[in-house]
Amino acid sequence: MLERTRAPRVSNTIEPSNPKRKAGQAEAFPEEDAGELARERDSVERAQAGDPSALEPLFARHAEPLFALLVARAGDRALAEELLKDALAAAVDKIATFRWQGRSLYWWLRQIALNKLVDHHRRRGRAQRLVDALRAEAEAEPPAARADDALIAEEERRRAMARIESAMAELPPRYARAIRLRLIDDLGRQECADALGVQVGNFDVILFRAVRAFRKAYGER
Image (spheres, rainbow, N blue to C red):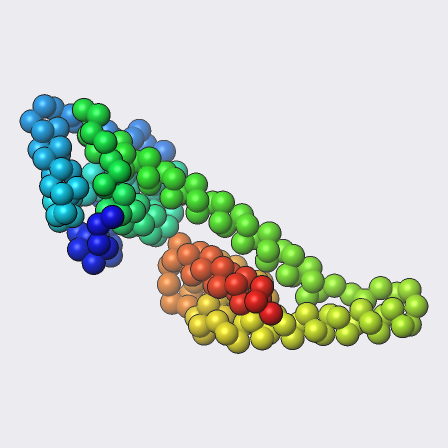
């Protein structure tokens, strides 16, 4: 396993050189001439031998088509940037497992990027189900059966709310505010993003991480 501290730098802002490319536009595949493939193989072998910086020119070459692919599939540029950075970081960690098959490294990077997108949607789905369950628990009214049952239910509801508030208090203020704005105050995504001073796509990432942190804090109670 290569050391992450020696990994090639991944830019904080990843933009394709052709900003007019639109979501849904045909995917652009890299050319695979013999000379370019030979240079790619040499770079990969140097990286596998312990020099991750050898991957930098390959990442620079393939970042644009990978970014365009993720924008087209995710429909959000900020999310696509986040996923691409995660994919390239994962590629550095996994480069020792790569086996040359006479094709551009692009196809391996492409699969990693798509896997990151799939993982994102799976995590987001699980997080949303958790939020729905917590909302139902927080908003539940005590049953109107017997007076004793109503008192017990109300006490359980108070305990659940106290448990939620206790978990919220452990979160970073930015995460707690994101949850309150979106899930408690029920503001729209754009309103939430404006309140935090970020783009909508960035807010979605913040909210996802906030819910994940909340789930961990809530589950430990």
